Length: 100
Ligand SMILES: [Zn+2]
Image (cartoon, rainbow, N blue to C red):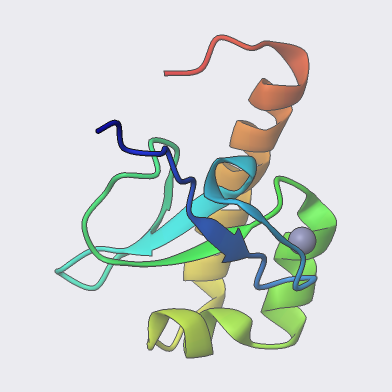
């Protein structure tokens, strides 16, 4: 019997859109409490998903969705770092398809 391939559905914490998890950029809280962009989507830890669009990142920030989704309180410098990583990643996706 073959197993049907199910792709997990996630929703964006910025706009709420639901889609295949691979359509989103994952943000992860690592076990030592760091919040990082997770380009592989496979890092261990509690994750949150965002459309690869700055607008959704900013929506999640302004609605404090990261705090709720990741059970953490993000400081401004964490957000700045995360925003840079997120934008670097989304730019990369837009210009080339050479993912990891
Ligand atoms: Zn979104």
